[in-house]
Image 1 (cartoon, rainbow, N blue to C red):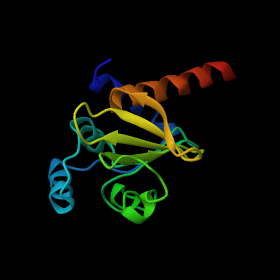
Image 2 (tube, rainbow, N blue to C red):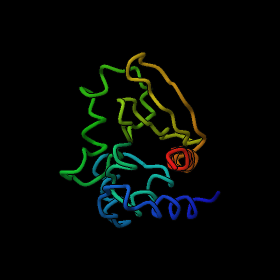
Image 3 (spheres, rainbow, N blue to C red):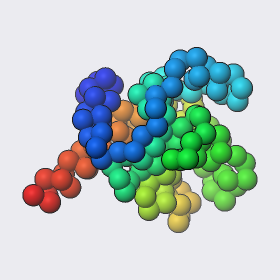
Image 4 (cartoon, rainbow, N blue to C red):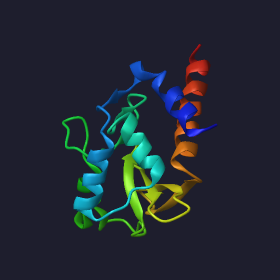
Length: 150
């Protein structure tokens, strides 16, 4: 499934989310310059759809770029003091937190893979090839639960 289809599919469930407004390319560029970081293309595209928030309530909190009452920013959750309790490799950026505490991290280096970091065992638990693959699985898990409830 391509990126656009995944984002569209995610947004068909908008009544199940509490998302922040999308940000512009300029806001993303300013964030990268100010924080001396280059975000992966798929993460930038995600922020152009929504700047974090909660997916499939109660579900995953996606951290955004601009401060909001709805969630923390990626800058806040990636401060050294916050990361110091975990052995998450430095090239992985925490971008989300699952409702049971595990973190979703994206590799800032090619191949820009995504990992689920187990907060209890302090180790990688799951792996996806991309943000889109992770989101696609998240949508599918929700659909499967929804169908099981019928």
